[in-house]
Length: 307
Image (cartoon, rainbow, N blue to C red; front, side, top):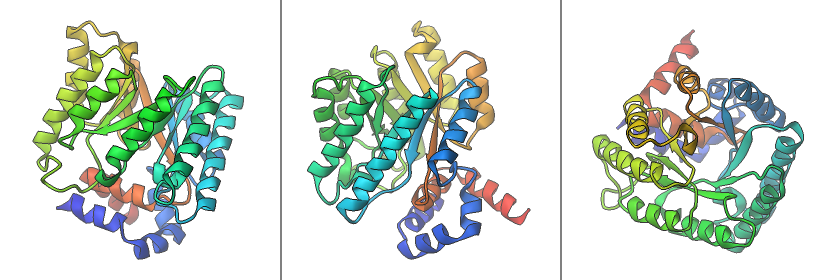
């Protein structure tokens, strides 16, 4: 119920416009969003790197309305990759296809993301582009694009996908991605989906997540397990030890500002950790989905508001 409420808020353009222009809204979102500029993202990345953790940087935005906006988004990612290279940051990037013009022209989005992947492939050491997953209307087209990009000469290992465990189709999608050695970020899923395509009860989502997680961990490909659920993390660690899977064969992933204590403990215990750091002016949809995913996030924000 609470999740559906926040998802509906994330899609409300009127409230979004008011929130993103509001200084109060920006202050409240600062727990989960690094800031609005590339320099804010760089500073946050440096702080996380100093704690022994990797980073994935995401310039927030989705569903651009014209090609110029898409090209502007691509230019920002070019600048981010330049900063990563010149400052030797331990970071890669995550992109949303609708931020790259996917709704307007799929070829435009393909060309933009292909250019970013080519840039990461030319970096020394090579870098990586994670293509984020959006709602189910985009799932097949997003995976088709990732497969196509990964097959292009020189792109192997430099582009990956996201799989959402709450979708019924995800097990089949995982197998197809693994067949080509494509890196996967496994998450539970943050969008409201219908009962005929997605698990609706959290225990079912969790069970499918663990099932897919074990498949990824034994695949021999370096994947990311994106979760803040301590029970699932404990199962992953126990499975790795039982199957003699080395700690450097995969990584845990968590969001900026959430469970920092757990992030640091995992690093201290010898596990790889990547922190997903979003930044930018278009933070509202992301922020609302984070509140919907975990009620504790909303409680934390309210406590700080009244404080």
